Image 1 (cartoon, one colour):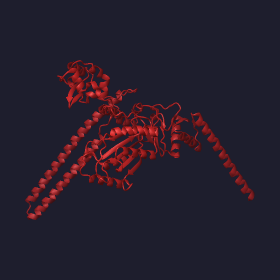
Image 2 (cartoon, one colour):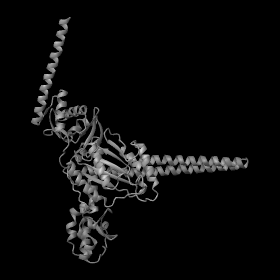
Image 3 (cartoon, helix red, strand yellow):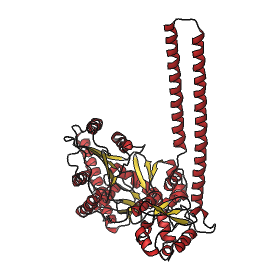
Image 4 (tube, rainbow, N blue to C red):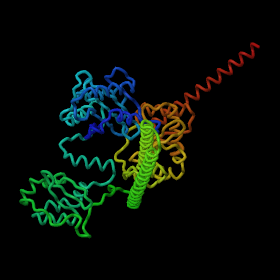
Length: 544
């Protein structure tokens, strides 16, 4: 599992109610929020708890830092724990971080490939009204993660805490965006030549060949690419830290050239998708073109909106001035004119407020409709609109095997794009597509999770939902299915298939034998039931 405290660097952006509103928003999905739990408040009602927590935070006047701790616990794909286990884990983390007795609201999300829990903790103690900021929290969190993985039998994840922060940030950016970072590009393309430079002049020449420049920043060096993106030199390799470089090459000598003035045929860093078994060059070129066009339209619209706003304000000012001149010219008493001036001024203020409000609404609408999208977000958007190639790229990002409950074919005959071409997903209600291509859509009243090779089944799925899932699986894979997951799930699937008289077989011999045994029992019970009905009917006739 992975546990992370989301930092909020700006106190202005810290808003407990806004955070809870985002966490509890279903976002037009039938299955997003699985559980909302309130702890250490007088009421379990969400609205009442929010008011109580906000009042507690406002009572602390001395705290200058963020008063909310946002902790996220994420579990490996396919691993689903019960609510009681998740609540116990939540309690352990809060105690380890020193938040025992602090007010908090936890929300469990199940709309992604990984079950995850958001814990919004009030740092202000409800009784002492003092603020608590955990010390060396990342070490405590990493240690507790290892302990919980062992206690609950979860997949072990590397919780190394000595890794350079910049490297961790670069890795997170690559995972979230799917685009190669400058750090990774330098390590792949230039780090060997950079490390073998024997003088500052040689180092500057090597860097120019790669469209880079080295500059002093703070107490160290940064490597700057031609597009202005920079990375700490020590993050690339410890031998490139300021201390090591000055010790090896002498006092720093700045370059007479910049990265932008490098040779035209030099290698240059360009943000591109991570290397993939599928060629994404055409898709990425289209993505860049659309983003550039969207930015251009956004800039044009904003300029037009500002111009229109300024014109309306100028007209309102002219009309207000005209009204004042008219009031000035009329013959009336001093108090009457004063009342007219006040009325005209109030009308002017109201007009200006309406103009600014309309401008803000139009600005936000333009910002939303022409917002910049990340590479993976754009692929998910395209896939939702029926782009099979985009869906295939997303699904190619999946790493490792899925360990949860699943229904699939023995040998998946589902071509990556065939399911889309048949129009099955288009005709269904697609709710979302994750960044590794898991499509969530509605089939009847059931939410289906389909990653292209299997249908993913959650542990708490009802029998009625299992019927719908089996019907979708038969349409997609045929009547011979592979059932993998817990033993309880496998047996439940066989029972559902028999109870609903589904013409389906299983590739697992033991499970198929169990299904056939259930079929015989079901047929025998039906025969006995029919015989009993005939006997009752015969007895009734004789008595008549």
